[in-house]
Structures are given as C-alpha cells and as structure tokens.
Image (cartoon, rainbow, N blue to C red):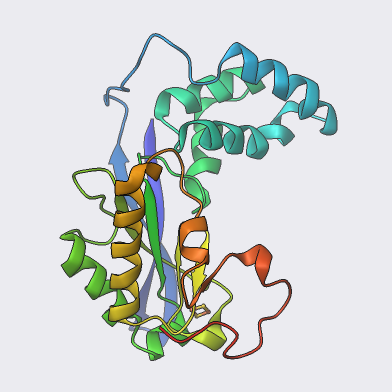
Length: 237
Ligand code: FES
C-alpha cells in the first residue's frame, strides 16, 4: 500500500501570469514495510463485545462506527498501532486502508506511542503573533526534544497544534487536558517541574489528564470553564 499525504504547493503559471494552487503528493512506499505484531490482539474480545452492544447498534452501517471504535482503541492503549488498525478494519468489515485514512486524518489519533504527558503549543495565527515559539523553544530546551518527539523516559511529548480556541489568551497551550493562557517560557517550565514532582511522588503513568496542573495557578480544565472564558480568567503565566 502506498500512503500519500497532500501538500498544497503554489505554482506560478507563466503563460497566464496567474497563481495556481496544485496538490503535490509526498509518497511513502509502505507495500514492503513490516508491521510490528504481537500475539495478543489490541481489539480484545471484551472490547468487541462492548462495541457490538453499545456502539454498533447506533449506526446504520458498521463503517459508521469507525470513529468511536478508533477512540475506544486509543482510550485503551493510549495510541493506535498498525496491528490495531488492521483489527479494527477486520471487525468493521473495512479495508485496512480505510481505517488508516481516517486515523491519519484526525490529529486526535496517535499512530505512534506518546509520552505520559503531552505538551501541545498552539501555532495558529493569534498565538504565532504572540510569539508561541518562545514557549515551544522553552520546552525543547528543557526536555531536549524537538516538536513531535518524546523524551527517552517516555514522560513528555511535545507537539504544536492548530487553534485551540483560546485565542484571547495567546499564546495558549494544553498539557494533557489542562489549559493555559498567556503562556511564557517560565510558566511552561514550572508546569513541567510540577508534573515531574507529582510523578515522582507515585502518581506517574497511566494516561494523564492534567488534573495535577488544574490546581496550579494559571491552569484550568476545560470542564471547569464552561462557555467562553472572560479575559484574564486564568492567571497569567
Ligand atoms: S490561535 Fe492559538 S488558541 Fe487560537
């Protein structure tokens, strides 16, 4: 199978003097790639029973249940391995490519293992104008990783995402599920230290939700701030 990712590339049409947008494709040959496998399925019999009972009945076709099934796998394992994609496709009567297309389209799905804590810095326009890079660079320097990488101890993953809907507090970021407005290198650094201390006291591992940060000044869980947040609701970093 060949996986192709669309890239929009501006081309100047010399004949007409107009700018055209053309879709170029980055191709990755995966026909000969080996899929890491393990004997035990990721989509266990218990998960299938639960999905069949509680999820499939809500959809006219099994294909309609693809997203919730992928969510179930990710919620259980923290990410979605290739083997799991094949199992999901088989369970729903789809081609593996269908499961891959969907899983690779949405940023919410992790197709590689992620750290115990995920630091997501917004890179969209409002945060870019407010120099989100200083926050990203502070994390890079503190953890010694690049965007998209995970620390060797598996504790932290750094990503940059598109608009988090927190533009009034740009630059904004999320750590696990905790939101932070007006982030600074100092505030994100303190958050990392706080998580390390928290983990060192025996709260580590499993899938983090940011609860430990929600009590820290300047951080909040989305559920605690329903609707639009008034400016300054969250303390400045
Ligand atoms: S642009 Fe960063 S939160 Fe909207």
